[in-house]
Image (cartoon, rainbow, N blue to C red; front, side, top):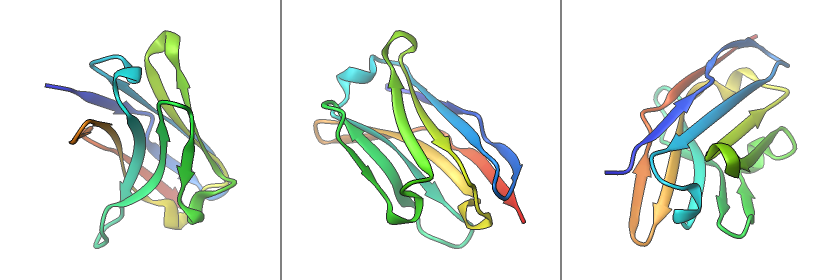
Length: 115
């Protein structure tokens, strides 16, 4: 069973930064796509960003220019660098990975941005 472990969430003031980490139980390049979703209270889970094995990325319009996804092969880790955070970025952030027809999820990490 694939496991994805997220870390790095917390409370930050508007305008601040946070970096989330996701460590899968298998090599990150064994997945076709990895990425991050988020879910705010009372809202549906939404895509934040995804990256495929070739390094192509797809960002939600709401985070373009503020968030950056990256991979560290030596640490088998996918990062989400979040800058210029806004209160509307408050949500539980989930790491996800796709392989063939299956999608895997982490347990989520809370990000709270105060105004």
